[in-house]
Amino acid sequence: MANDKVSIHGAWASRWVFILAATGSAVGLGNIWKFPYMTGMYGGGAFVMMYLVCIFMVGLPIMLAETLIGRRGRQSPVNTLKALAIESGASPKWSWAALMGMIAALLILSFYSVVAGWSLDYILSMGSGQFAGVSAEGAGAAFGALTADPWRLTLWHTLFMLLTGFVIARGVVAGLERSLRIMMPLLFVLLLVLLGYSMTTGHFMQGFHFLFNFQPDRVLDGVLAAMGHAFFTLSVGVGAIMVYGSYMPKNASIGSTILTVGILDTLVALTAGMALFPIVFAGGLEPSAGPGLMFVTLPVAFGNIAFGQVMGTLFFVLVLIAAWTSSISMLEPAVAYLVERSKRSRVLVTSVLAFVCWVIGMGTVLSFNLGAEAKFFVFSDDGFHLFQWGAEGGRNFFDSIDYLTSRILLPLGGLSFAVFAGWVLKREAVREELAMKSPLLFNLVYWFIRVVAPIGVLIVFVAELSK
Image (tube, rainbow, N blue to C red; front, side):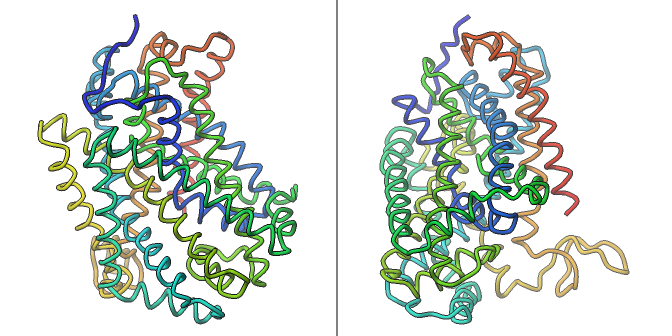
């Protein structure tokens, strides 16, 4: 039977708008920042190869599962899982998986907004010439001064959250779709401009070989890291792709659409690497700089090469756009759910949820300065403490929220969605949504959703918890 449900929130104008939306959700700080430095840490081409394998074996099947569930239910993730579970003769408590994902998304957004706010500060700093001729010590001191200033962090955190809330409050068509039609092409253009510039540095081939030079002896070094990043980079496990799928046109092919999203997301990550590594080499710096690559190493590189001030400013605009397109996808599932549940206006619901995220985000702001000594989950000689000031062990607020979401809630959410699509939804419902003409291809994809992806997520889950 055909699925004629329609979302009360609206619908994407076309399949390509969904592709822009899903790619915008997937493309974030992980592509522009984390992928390049992980490539540097785990041997270049060997890591890239394992990452591509894991994307297609783990990431895309779960993204496919989320999308087909979303389009099948046409509601917020919580109500979609509840309705489809009842329709399939299963417990409505499956909605708890989506509720967990929704909470995880809000928690991630709370600290993501703070980190994304750093890019706003760096746009001004880079544009004003603050990093011209800067040394590594000077760049490190500048970043330290930013994180040590709670008022400055609060300003950028507030502004970024307002930007996110503004888009969501305007609705699916006037807000999400209209903004994504502008931001995503701009993101691609800026990335290509940076790539073109990197070709003029004289170190492009050095960066290219570093990224793609295959070292067989390094393959196993980063396999778990590649699998974990392949899972997290596509924004699966929180319901963002599911709610975007609920706005997807019913005649659009889910399989080819998700494959396109996966290819675009991967191309952005690879292009970012090809654009950034030559710039790093041109500055005489090491590509395996770790998490400090974006806010310490790159400012040094941009500050000491020709036209670096302009290119550095464009780079942090690129980072801002990537973060913005991801942040709106984190807020949308909760907004859609509360609009359905409370029948209140989208503007009011968005304002309340954005404020909640802002308040929680203040814990992250203070984690870098005034509240740095506040530690959570402390194990000491006198036992376990949920909170302790000035303890040697434990995690600060930011690290605690990051650990809870990235290592526990996200993997559990992705696992739940894959199991729901593969084992709870009726096979015919999955077949109808995927609409694949080849039985062999459908069986292969279905097997990846049911078996391969859940096993992959379990491996990621156990590996992350053991760190």
